[in-house]
Image (cartoon, rainbow, N blue to C red; front, side, top):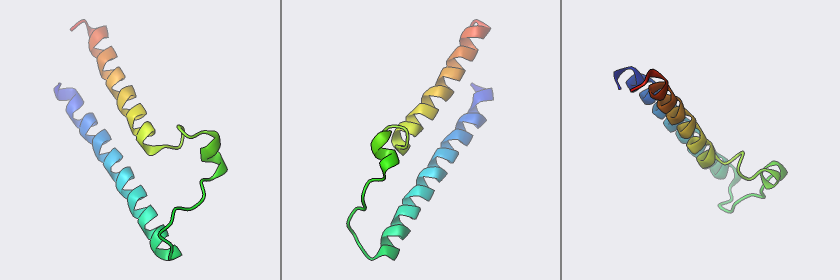
Length: 78
């Protein structure tokens, strides 16, 4: 597992930074607008609700990364 430790840490840090950035961005947007109500949902999200969802994207990245690790160890014969 030693060779996958640093890539795993890197992916976790990137996901945390993206989540933090998006959270702060939404907070500032609400603060500057002066409203505490949700805004209208954009048409892009209505058409593709799963593609632009950060939670779904995080799971997709996690599953892809885990799949690569599993395939690597399967191909090496462990």
